[in-house]
Length: 201
Image (tube, rainbow, N blue to C red):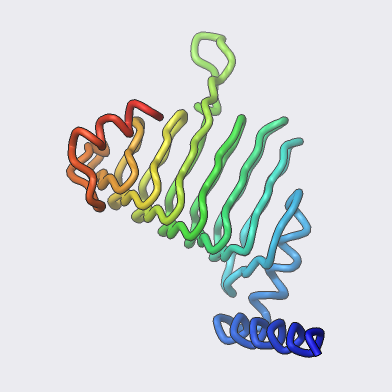
């Protein structure tokens, strides 16, 4: 009897998921998933160009996620990209990892966003530097924002359109402008608590 109930639950989940997008999105997602070290149910929204994965010897771990056309994931030798359950990457978003880029659960990443943990080039003959980028859960990143090396963004933060983020953003923080200045808090943290949270990162 419980096996029938479990099967009914699975069929209900499958029907619900299929209502959220065309079958072709799951087909393209299945093909895309083959490029990952591990992956859940991947949805690749119809359109061109298809999402692109460049793996130069690292790892890419993706849970149940949605990718829009033009998304590019690039991981360098021994680098790591991890994307949490329920997160979507909109059109032309690029994620580049030399060391590690970790994106939490239920994040909404708008179009033309760049997230990278490396300079990708040498300066004065020195090798490119890399520092991990960690993005918490339920983070919203506006269009054309850039998240650069070493940045930690706390849970529930909002990054405004066009922001260039070079410093940590606390949980619930709202960062806007080309310098991504912290303007306020989305949650109930006081300024003192937010400052303490930044120091933890």
